[in-house]
Amino acid sequence: MIFLELFVMLIVILIAAEVFTNALEHLGEKLKISEGVTGSLFAAVGTALPETSVPLLALLAGTQNAATNEEIGVGAILGAPLMLATLSLSIMAMSVWKRRGTQGHLRPERTGLVRDLNFFIVAFSFAAIAMFVPHTLVAVRYGLGFIMVMIYFIYVMMTINASEALVEEGHATEAGGDMFLCKLGLPNNMPIIVLQLLLGLALLVAGAKGFIHGVEEASSILGISALLLSLLIIPIATELPEKINSVLWIRKGKDTLAFGNITGAMVFQGTLLPAIGIMLTPWEPRQEVLLGIIVTLIAAMWLRYVIAKSGIRVWHLLVNGALYVTYLLLVLA
Image 1 (tube, rainbow, N blue to C red):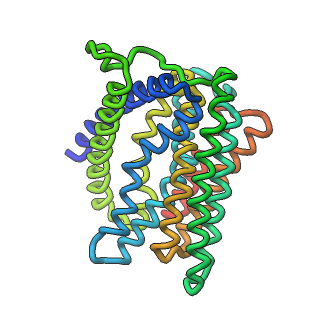
Image 2: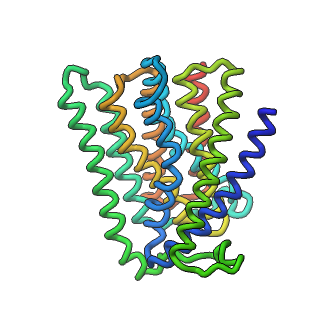
């Protein structure tokens, strides 16, 4: 029954992703904004919000076992960027591997992707440094948390400011077809676009929640600890299904939207959530946590390196997937 539930929920998530991305394309087209803003801000934050509730609920309204709540909170905060920078990018590349080949090019708009990765690498480095700041230096820890919040604010401003020039250069968001609700006879206007967006997001949340329930049941059978559950299982259950948006976009040739959906979520979840973790949890360099941060930064810096050197090919992102497998082998060993 557990596996049947997982299968049904994945179908719901696939349908929801189609509904959500279809509406988002029309929203971006209607607002005359770049694919960078649509992918890195709207899609990334919209699909990351449901998962964001996991660490927040664990830390602010969890069970009476504070230590377990903190483990779940820290694991979920750091597990999401780890999964996005490694497994999500790799799966996205594998979805077009047959069509484009191992040496095939992936062509997202360069400036937006470089901005996403630069901001993420800087912010996540601050998250790593904060683990070694003694708890007696409360002002320093809170200061680092505030800096990370400001990093995201500056990132949002820069992404929006770059939109107009990118639209003029031909990187405007364009819808690939009619909006689904319009096929039922409804007009293509802002209220209907918002309605379809909310419908898609609601289906995504419902599908992800059902998927989480199934994964938690499976993990309890396997006897996985709270920290490993939150580092490995929760991000896969909450993040990965909703990043199917990126698979759908890249298969349609919308590489900028596909990458932005992932790297924008990396910036969102690599700044605001670690800031909360630094201020509300012990945030200590435990072995599996520190290793996760290192692997995440290596994956992000590898992608940043290949962009600067020769552009992204399909096999480059398979390296990110290999980094995730390496992390799994190390922590489970």
